[in-house]
Image 1 (cartoon, rainbow, N blue to C red):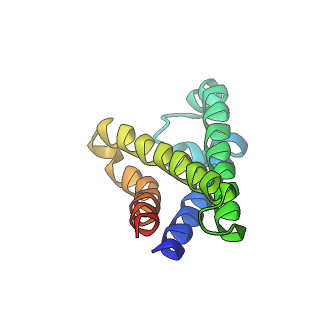
Image 2 (cartoon, rainbow, N blue to C red):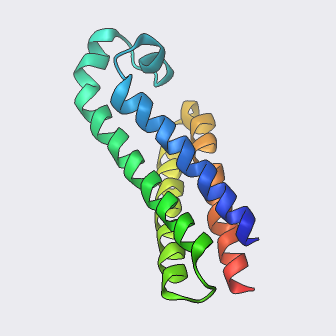
Length: 134
């Protein structure tokens, strides 16, 4: 369970780095803003500062998850380092999961994106809780 949790946390973190790239680096490219249902280049230019900020939010969640994975991977079971690692994983993946829930509640057209964004962190959290509890 622990290994599976760490794998799903890693996948979630990678996905959020990709989201960071789209939101903060390529937002004004038509292929990116169309993916986010932005209506026009002018709208993409107007919303760029918001997307830029949101992208960094996703990057920081990814970095926290990666750091947590590293702590858990190289720590002794039950050590302070392992506890810190699981805290980071649960916090960062939990935030990713809650953000996906907010996205899903934003409208039916966002359900697929929410499922994509939320599945890996959900599995990371659930499997991590089960693995730590055993």
